[in-house]
Image: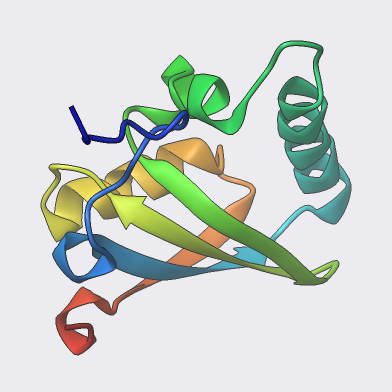
Amino acid sequence: DTSFTPPYQTYPSIVNMKIVLVEHFVNDAEAWQKVMGGHFATFGQPGMSIDKAQKLPVFEGQSCLLTCPTSTNMTLCVWQQGDLSEDEFQAFIDRFTQGLCTNKCYYISDSLG
């Protein structure tokens, strides 16, 4: 048997992913920092992995691939959109940010592949 099973979770080709760049325009920087700090504290717990963290209810089956705070008033995130329509994904992002941000989604998956 010459088959190989990688010791990590494999993901589909990026060409098949629905990729979304989200601009989070922060309305309440102090509260937003607390929310994001809570997520980062969860990710840093012993025995926690990104795969485990992404399965937490707050993510509703969506995957945040990259978070980049650019200032106290803006955070950029790259998301892998699950099986949601654009309207449903926008509603998820608005729930996720708990009213602390005004969110703009850019659906870029059509530019890949």
